[in-house]
Length: 480
Image 1: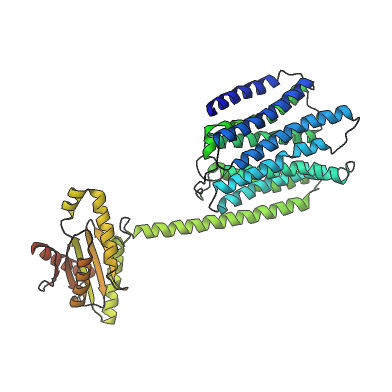
Image 2: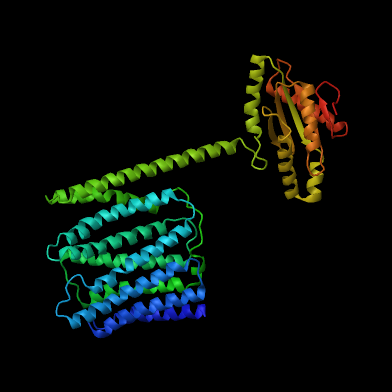
């Protein structure tokens, strides 16, 4: 059923878009064609929702309502023109045309909220920046001229302004949807293409109105065909199998700005100064306040975005710094961290005169364990051993992974006897029935940190040679 619906819609779309160019402009057939395409698209969306059962079907019900309402405006306008000498402006046709904006905007808002379960503040700032720039253009060329017409009355002003405002709202939703994170499947791309058609069509009409140019029959049909393509792309998005996953929550995008987005943000930020320059060149600065407010808003948004990028950079730098001194498998400090911390501890012991003990720990027969149970089991042993040993230590002790199955332990303010007791608790806590050997040495007051570690390492080899599963003190008898 679903695949047949998609194939049927593709055939309808091809015939509708290409065939419309052959229909005489201004004819009754043209009107019927446009209304039929809109209603048929709405029906296909409804059928797709019932067949596909996508997540967040409310989005598609609202889009179907908006498409049907917008197409109905063509019929309402035709009926009013035939039954009234001058239906005037605004009319019920405008109410039908405008129904597309709140319906689609609400549906898209629901979709965006579902897809972005986690707050994406950087995406919100980027979308607001782009919308502010385009909104300033809309104010200068569409909203202000519509509001300045003295012949249409208050309601006419409201309706005239509602069209460009609706476009700005749809633009905001489109931008927010497009710059959200996550995979972009076919249904996603079709929705964005449909929105692009409506925005392009309205933008083209705005330019034509500013030029005081009446398009010819072919130009009029091409412009109308753009809106039909928008209808049909919505239908294709609903009929495509990917619609089932369109509303699933996606991972937030990375804070990194792509080159395309950076270019778009740059253009949006330059719209205000460019408008001011153009009006100054023509000696007609008529929108100074609006341009100034727009520039201030864009400047503040850029500052916020820069702050977000700096914060993200600081977090990434801190994360890299942590990774540089942290063992990825066990989460313990690594050898680099140990080589930094031990000389500091030796210097503190030199100043304070308190003892400092170091131990080198090696899990017994680790290679045999790996060969018997596999490397994943070996990794698990290392992680569980590190966690179990940590629980036996004091808060001032410092355990690090030295490499492979070898660990090092720093015990401030502890002599060999106390250090040996701590190591013995660790040995008994070793998980998965395994054991370890250890060598332990207390700083003699003169040796370097490397020499201290070497003495403990030599004691470790004595423990291994003595049969493993024991603790040996440097230059002393075994404690185990």
